[in-house]
Length: 258
Image 1 (tube, rainbow, N blue to C red):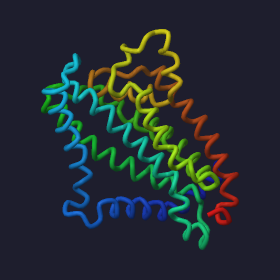
Image 2 (cartoon, rainbow, N blue to C red):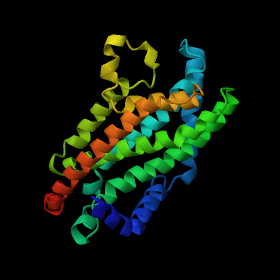
Image 3 (cartoon, rainbow, N blue to C red):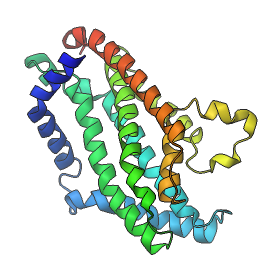
Image 4 (spheres, one colour):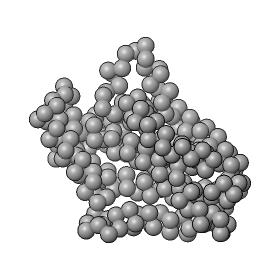
């Protein structure tokens, strides 16, 4: 696996160019262009603020921020995985004509999604200050959570991008899976609302510790549970090793299958 990582590093310029291409073409032709990276989360926040402050009043202080700090990381995860599912097929001309490490494709999707997430955090930080929730020293732990989420997102992206080449329906099934997955992740409800007898099942979900950690740091202004986060990272590493090996096995026939 070390050799594979070295090979990816040798193709870092290709990775960089694919990430730039994705970021440039995402809003190509639109009036605001790259500014949509900031406008999208800002508009989402405005909608949540209006709805949960006037119409659907939920007994959680500043619920719109409680929701927002968990929703943006979830969007990064779900969008990256779903887009990765079709990335090999979408780049079939590249796959058929030139040699390069095929894992560059899902890697570029996840990395461009990460860039968008980081820009989204600018809106979150500003919103935390305006809403008077504030920013605490616990923010220093945020990079750790981002890294763990990146690993988990990349793990699932490797897996679905390879499997979708052979099972094209997977790309469509993922939409339903992600919708169900969303409701089994504590994004719109606090972890304390889950009955104790079901709590262990929610923590089988690798995204549960991630979202809980984001909310601990950004909404509650406290340190995350490092044991929970450490277990999550370990699980993420195990999943990415498994997914990467599956990807390497299946990639041998990508050119023939697409």
